[in-house]
Length: 178
Image 1 (spheres, rainbow, N blue to C red):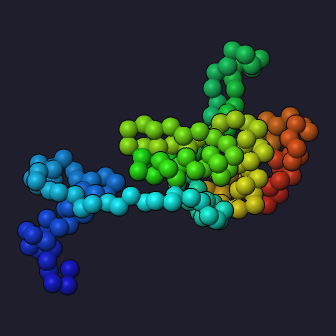
Image 2 (cartoon, one colour):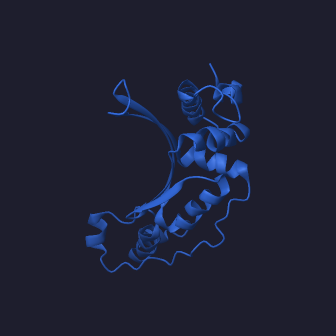
Image 3 (cartoon, helix red, strand yellow):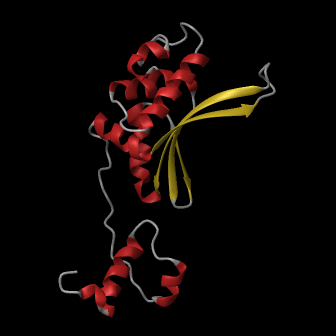
């Protein structure tokens, strides 16, 4: 920018080569206008291992989702079932990192859908015994902490008393209760 290189066609081509390698790439209009753009090589990140629980808490703050789903259920006497779902989503190039979460947290599954990879936890006992205790010990920051608080509250409401070795979820996260 200091040399105004971006105002020249060759400078613009350098910028387009970089943008092509980024998550969303080029718009259709730019692909047509600059059809010969060659993406800059994007190095493969090796050793995608989680080394610090606080990193995972921060990553979840930005990229995670604590969902409460209510679905029809013919096996439940009220006709509905409550499901808790924890999800982290990334570009497929981070599949190795997402798969490492299974070992790190001791639960969950990974699915790939096109260019997206999802780490997903749906088993209730994994929520109460692994996911919730992890994020109580390594707190989520920002607005997502409220989502986590509500997630814990629903877990508490659906928990059968004395069914978890850690006790009631509300007892695990007193700072998240209103």
